[in-house]
Length: 112
Image (cartoon, rainbow, N blue to C red; front, side, top):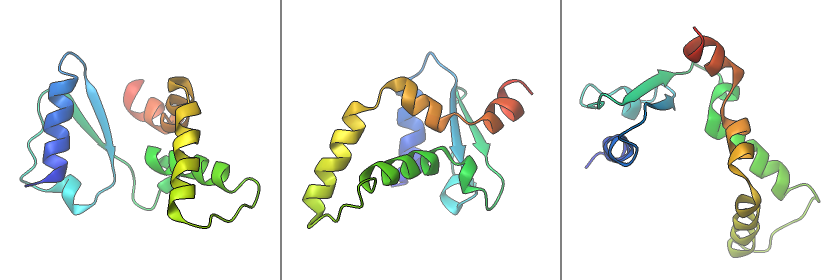
């Protein structure tokens, strides 16, 4: 079983009437010769050593900033999990889109 292939296939099926852009680093699972990309999936690779361009890193940083804004110490993982759940529940689609859609992607792949 290949989790990335399952993700690609599932995304293509779930959003079959859309062009789906997936951002990836150049990890082995993203560049395997065995990955089959359906016609409605486009893979964009970010340059090496550029976490600031990785959409999930930008979202992760926002979550980290919000969970540590009051310099709180979480006694156990359940308390932290509840805090993260609350933060994500408050995030609108526009906020997530703003955090994950970088100008680099727009400039180099959408308008380019």
